[in-house]
Image (cartoon, rainbow, N blue to C red; front, side):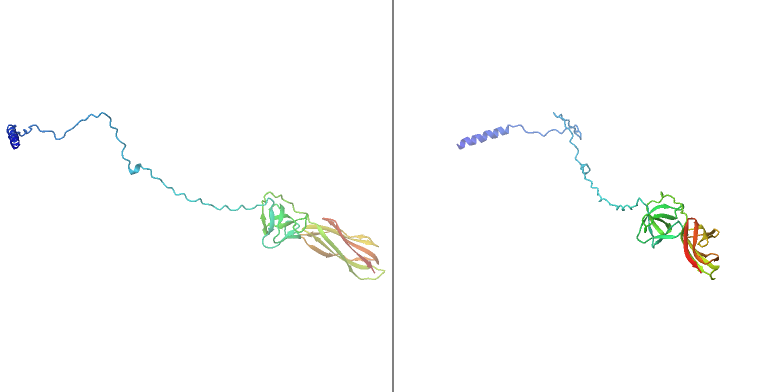
Length: 261
């Protein structure tokens, strides 16, 4: 057995001694290019992939601040009555027969009271109202003393009234004498008006003797009462009536009875 292994070793060494000796490769004399370009044919087409999304490509939600609604208080509408009304400013107001201080005071517009305005004078300085104290009557108040609500532009112009005699009085003024006479007698009379006017009047005697005086005229520049006396008369003893007779602007009388002695 050992003899076989030794023989195999001798054969191997003999073969090794007969192998060609390796020679180094010759150094290439041609310079190789510094850059090599390889062209490779692929069996498919490359499709460039989508560029990578940048932060600017992403959706960024925008938040817009919404302020709460602003509520503006709407002032309450001012009630304007369709019918114009007048009330006192700070104190009761005289209500007169005509549009002016020369007319008689016949009523009043008191504090806290309103009255319907139904007319005006031409200059709108006086209001013609429903009399607040007398149903169905009318009177005039000065606009400067009143507060007005409602539209007064369409109010009609009311002409001033005609002044009238509103009162007549008469009394007897005893004189002197003795029956059978003649007896001296006189009379006192008074006439009242509600405004400026001219009054005509006369004295009338009725009884045992009938007499009429001449017609006379007195001018009133405002509502007033005028007191006056007649001329003295000489009458016989008897029973009489004396009449103070107003003829214009309206007919009105007053009388008194007396007896002479």
